[in-house]
Structures are given as structure tokens and as C-alpha cells.
Length: 364
Image 1 (cartoon, rainbow, N blue to C red):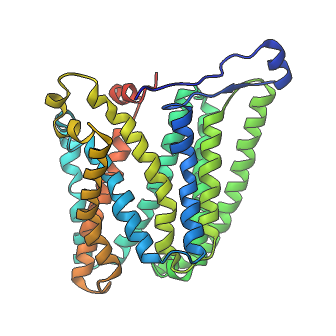
Image 2 (cartoon, rainbow, N blue to C red):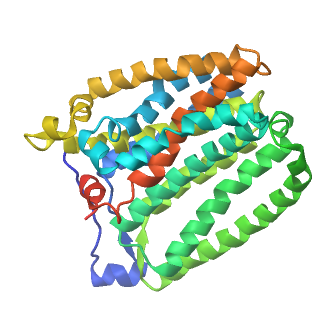
Image 3 (spheres, one colour):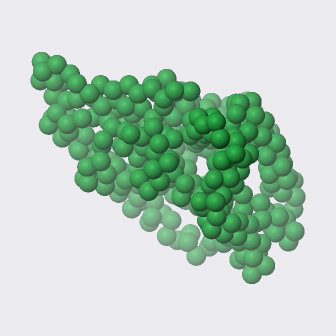
């Protein structure tokens, strides 16, 4: 698939004078793909919210179907361009093999009597991973649209982080089931943290919107894709996390994450097109070339992995005795797949540090 870029870089002098601004509209893949997959796919989160909170779908079938058919395949997407790529295994040998130690983290914590703390920290990392991906897409749009001023970088980063953190803390502080998963020593400070984050969000939001107004008045380029991304992701997190619903700590995982999953699948598929661009791709990249040769192959391998990984995990999470030692050991081990995904994702998408990633994503 060719990467198309739509740019509104120039306006007539008269229109610039009227609008006092220039709109920068450069996409990662192209207008249609970005609007559908990176921005518009937020509708899937709203759809799950309505279906579940409205009582149209039961909790466990919704979560299991999402986990096996959507979430686990997106974890496989990371593996498709790392462990299954012969060239990546050579270049990142130390990173890839040391990352497998995450499978031991959960069982070791359970053996040490720290299972409760481990599962709490695992949940925090899972949410941070969602936020980090939104930040990553924002950075891609900033690079695409040359929106890299020091002040704008700082304001974008702070506004995004606090705007996503406040509703999560508010949800935990107000939901009894969520609070039951928080170490008792932290209970007393959550309300204080919630209030502090609310004020921080208001201040950061005022500063951020003020900066956009300043850019508009000065005729500086306005990064339209970045605005659309933030307008899609931030309100959705607030609405989902602050909407009452039964068994919320379980339900919101699927509702929040399906948007993240679809964004990631599209980015992986765009990146993995690089495997089809050279005659020696099969020799250089090995199984990664086969996985990405057809969309059907990518989907099929992802679902097979989903059955392998998530069927046991969902049984452990929803059917087994949560207090049993073997259940906690199994759950701790199975978190390893997610941890490896989280950690590798923080390393393999660094466009500035890895020119091959920038080339695959058409950043220049």
C-alpha cells in the first residue's frame, strides 16, 4: 500500500490574512487511513461502552471475545516485527532475549508474597501503556507536521499526560472494586491525588489551549491531525472512566483498549509492508515476511496466538479461584506476554534513533 500525504502548506496571502493561520495537515499513512484507523476507530470504544453499560452484552463474553480476537493479535503484531524477524533478532539480540525475563517477574513476586502489589503495578503499567501509545501517535504527527518547538513539545507532553491520568485516578478513587485492588497504604492519598490532578489538568489545559490561540493569532501552523487525535482519545477516556457500570475494573480494560488495539494493528500493517519491498525479503526477515505477505495471514496468525495466550489467561482471570496459589502463579506468568509487548514497544518505535523505522513509516 502506498503512503499518501495530504498537505495544506500554502494558502493565498488574502486567505492567510483572513484566517491568521496556516493549517498543517500531513498524515502518517494518508487522510482516509488515518481518519479511519488512528482517529475514527475511537467509535469502537464508544460502541462497547454503550453495549455493555446499556446491558446489551454480558461482561465475560465481551471481554473474552475482545481479548482473543483483537487484543492478543495486537501483541502478536509486536512479535511479528521482532522475534519473527530474522534481521531484528540479529540487531536487537540482547533486547529481545533479556525481555523474556518478564515472564519470571510475576511468579517470583507471588513466591515472595508480593503478588497483590505485583498485580496492582501490572494494572498501572497496562494503563500507562495505553497513554504512551497515544503520546507516540501524537509525536508521529508532530514530526510529520514539523511541530517540534521546545515550548509546544513540553506543553503537549504535560497536557496529554495529566489529561489521561486524572480520570484514571478519579475512577480508582470512586470505585469500590478498583479500590480493593489498591494497596491499603495508598488509600488515604488517592483523594488528595485526584484533586491535585484535576487542578493540574485545568492549568495544563488552559496553558495548552492558550498556546494554540497564540499560534493562531501569530499565523503559526496548526497541527490538525494532532488536534484530531487528542480530540478523539482524551474525551473518550474521561467518558469511559467516569461512567458508572457494573464490574467496572474488568469492563473498562476492553472498552478503553479496543481503540488502542485497532490503531496499533493498522500501524503494524503499514510498517510491515517493508517486508514486501525487496526480492530477498524472505531471506533477510524469515517468518516476518510470511506473516505479513497477506492480510489474511497476519489475521490468522494473530488469532491463533490469541487462542494460545488469552484462552488460558481468561480462564485464570474469570473461572479459577483467584486466591489459589496456582492461579496467582499462572496469572503472573501470563502477564509476561503483555510485559514483553509493553517493554518492546517502548524501544522499537523510536523514529529519531532508528532510521529504519522512520523509513518504514515514511516520516521524511
